[in-house]
Image (cartoon, rainbow, N blue to C red):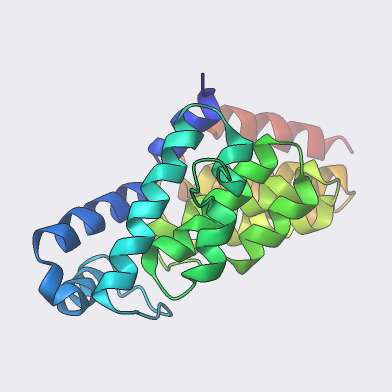
Length: 226
């Protein structure tokens, strides 16, 4: 059975966007490029993606759906590497062989999560670094994951900086305060109390109704006595 991390993945706006994109492509395969461009504009001018042919994109999506099935079952090794007996691709191979497609890029994201689930933190960091992060809300989850991987690897400074990047990737009530607080807590742990205090002040002044308000107030109090 997949755990709560897998449940969180299904709620990621990036994953949901990809699924909607796939549905649109399947409904009109002959105009994939036009559809993709339209979706890019609608979802906030996502840039930096290369488009292969319609057949290549479709093949990548089909292979990705099989690997997603392994992931959903909690078989992260098979999701990452595929199954040599069944001759199926894993996220790793899809990311490499279909790097110019939507699905290929998303496979890099899945690879990072799968490697993390398997305890391969440095490997996961390599995968997330190869992922082309979209602008706006679609990219916040990837930036947050990147920060958490740094944290899991013991690199507190990089984690703090990347949480702050995630906070500013898309300014909104849902994700910005949480990422700012994560960054503030790490800066405080690193001894950079001035930076931590600045971020706490930002949370309390710009997001006074945030669910992170009580934690921010608690951190503010601790910083005041240091």
